Length: 322
Image 1 (cartoon, rainbow, N blue to C red):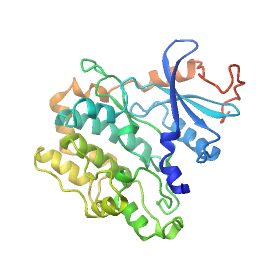
Image 2: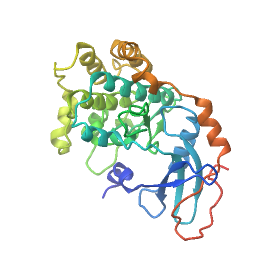
Image 3: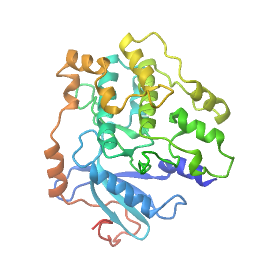
Image 4: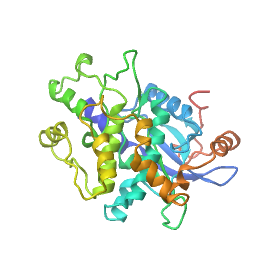
């Protein structure tokens, strides 16, 4: 497997487990990064931790509580999302969401991306599996609360306002990334001068998510690169079965020209978002409210345990950034 392919599959190799806080008994998630995996890079892990720390208290991003490591693995103690990921919800509702639900979910992801992008950082792997829900109970106010997770592929813009390496999930690639792959020599990696994109790749990926929520199927199916990539470069055909506002929103998110694609902040002002929230407050938009202070306080006052170390009494090395 090539280095590029290994990076593409790194989420699959990462394992998650559930345990409790030593003091509060609250459930948390443990993201375990195994040192023996070929893709493991300690510096990249440090970068992921720095990004998550910078987002501390952001209510639409999974929060990092603590970090430990032993000789086998690095453990990221994170906020637990009991509702599972969005791919599971899509299967539960058999694909198609109500427009108001879709708008609320998309708005929250835009809030998360705006927080990330305001720091000059691209997520680079916005997809269903990296959007976690806070409840499986349709009667719960948390049912439509979603949080962006997995910041392991995040990358900061360089001095020119660009990113010059490629990572992510292929069917969510923006056309500017696909074009870079199209011009690269097979197996030779990607010379920096052939790759140049910015934060707008996340907006495109969210467009793929939004399209799927509205129409019950993905715009670019997981086919061979030779079939899927030309389709991405041509762009998505937007069905007319959704409202005009929804159609316009998807078409803007999936704009082929990244310069014409809206920023996360601009997309939050789209009438399909603002009017939906206005019409359905407070029930649906309750998930857009929350206390940053409560999250920050819980992280600073709670001690966390790490489950399933490589040995029953494995010594926990102090946090990486201490």
